[in-house]
Amino acid sequence: LRVLDKRLPVRIQADNGSEFISKSLDKWAYEHGVTMDFSRPGKPTDNPFIESFNGSLRDECLNIHWFLSLEDAQEKLDNWRREYNHERTHSSLNDMTPAEFIRSLRKDEDL
Image (cartoon, rainbow, N blue to C red; front, side, top):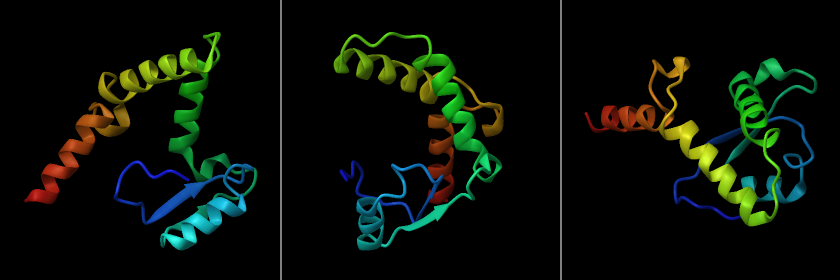
């Protein structure tokens, strides 16, 4: 697994999809001191925020685009991600974008 940021999460919440129950992810998490927390099978209410995100990604990007190449898919996904994280406000974040919300948390840490 490639780590893009030097700060690692303490815990990863995941469902029981095959990509999350692989031995390589389990080994990586163990080696890096990251706790894997799995939702109960068939219980999407255990992880409502990611279920909402996945629904938005599917409805607003994956289901409406034809991807002509890997590069085309990457560009369309990057554009959607940028809009989702930097332009769209979220009511669950007090009508801030996710980027604004993260900045507000970092400001609080500095106090």
